Length: 145
Image (cartoon, rainbow, N blue to C red; front, side, top):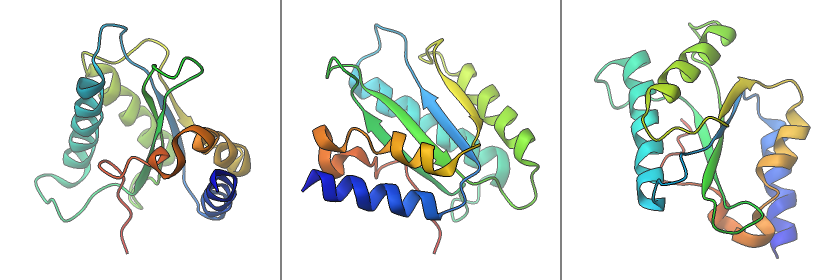
């Protein structure tokens, strides 16, 4: 079943035009609940930066939970589309700036423009064999209709 989830997720992601990939790590002492809270805080700050207090508009993104080889290193990955009015490189810079302002952010975090959609699609789904559909972080993902 998880192979089917992986294949479906990989195919879906590779068909969409995301602009930016993020790998968000945390300081070692950060508790799992604080990590999730930090991810929500990050996206709220990003949404506010671009859309002010209008909560009906958000950056389109899909976020992923990963637990690493040790199975106890919760960290996150995301794919995001830049707003139509923002240069993609500037969007990448803004995301990096906002993430590294968050006190729990780890030094191994990386946010960059996507160069290979299929490679990114394979990577973000590679932990579905462990997490199944819980790989997708539904609390922080947002896709407009």
